Image 1 (cartoon, helix red, strand yellow):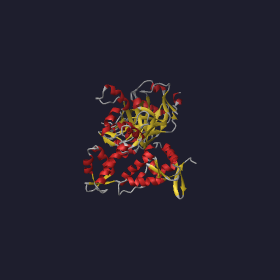
Image 2 (cartoon, chains in turn blue, orange):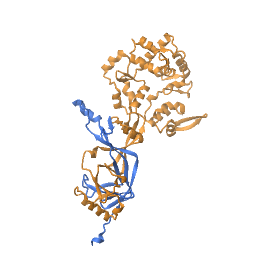
Image 3 (cartoon, chains in turn purple, blue):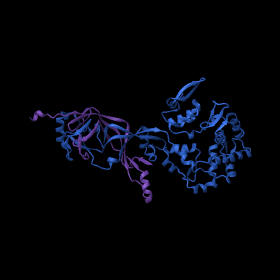
Image 4 (cartoon, one colour):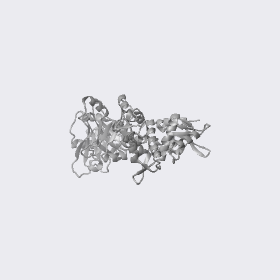
Length: 124
Length: 402
């Protein structure tokens, strides 16, 4: 039996999803953790614009029909009173999931990214 | 489509400056004037447990309401079951949905309306992508999965106080509500309804089925007492029943049967025996050991077995027996709903094996439990059976039958 519950403290914060076609990979296959991705702007017309490497993407801010709950698996949550030999069993059957946030909106970038061609002539 | 991140950008974590942002904008031929003054600088979060431990769960409006009211959701079932998620009152099927797009989760993201501050200088806000998802959990309302309930409770049936020592020695597991919720994929409310429907009784904290013959014996004692005292069917004195039979039958069992078989009258002193339930059980008493019964013989034996003043009616046997009119002489067959498979397709298969054509009324009790909010009996029949008309009566038969 696994529980899912809202966190005891703090209001859910504004979490969002950026939906991209395809995948983000690093050139050379480096580990992505901690790496810079790109700049996200909004135009004055409200169009989200994402610049990643040599690509510019324009998208749309849209509410989700069915919001997402972001669940965090909390392993090893067990009552303090439980006995040593029972604890391994408890770990199996009693994983707690906590809801970190509810995502109600996303930025959808579904058009093909446009390449950015730097102005080479200028530097010649 | 793969978007490659420029190699020079990923050599090390660095603090991006406004100049760099502006430079990229110039290269991209985007005029800064056309943008709101906030730039969100996105980077991947550092490696952490969250990479493995975060999941996305899609919510419908009911689940969202329930969560915002502070109720928790429970995932139920053991490793062999497909996952279900329960609120206090409903059960949902949980499935993984795979997607070809990537969903980058960004905590504290600024939406368009959050970036409209008036600032002369460009404001940089660092935001992290906590995880990129290629799948999420999808939920769909489904009925409770109760099949296991019977097999769990069938072993530790209650046959009276004199057999309790035997049950204890046999080491058969008895189940509390808490235990059952661990095993059964149903919400608490749905489970309690199912326990009630199956006539389970909570004895010293554990839910038990009553052994059929014991159940019959206790009901006979009660009906015998009614007869002995010449009480009217609507003049049953509950406290007298408890007093008189208290020595032979534990009060928890007496109360359980009285709750089921009688309704309290407005005067709060007397109760009325329920014709439907008494007749149904006594019908089962006749049919269960025989399996089949000549229809005419059954009907007269049944009527004779019920207390005077009660009139048997075929509708009382809904879901436990069917009439077979195709053979001569016609017969009554013991055909309990609880023995049918839980799976919709399997169940229809068994139903059409048992009988080729069914009227809606006849089949309803056997398929009703498979209905969900969106799928009522008619929708189920339309999907899983073929309609035809026999002597002006609409009938359903197997889709791919003869």
